[in-house]
Image (cartoon, rainbow, N blue to C red):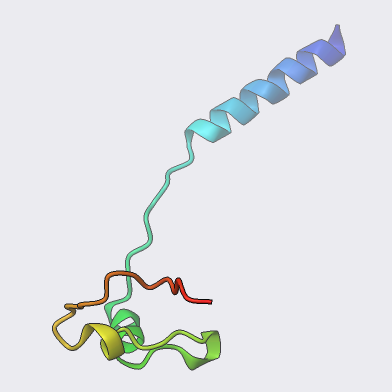
Length: 69
């Protein structure tokens, strides 16, 4: 009986702890975003967005996926 009481108490504690969790969305760092857009990230092999989308952020590219072999 004692082990059942401990299990119930443990379960209720976990349930209560889960209710206190708040999910907060991370805010984008505009400085990092601008640097990525302008310069890309050579360390991660990411091309600068501006190279295709231009300074205004518009693009005539319909897809970033190559369909040629």
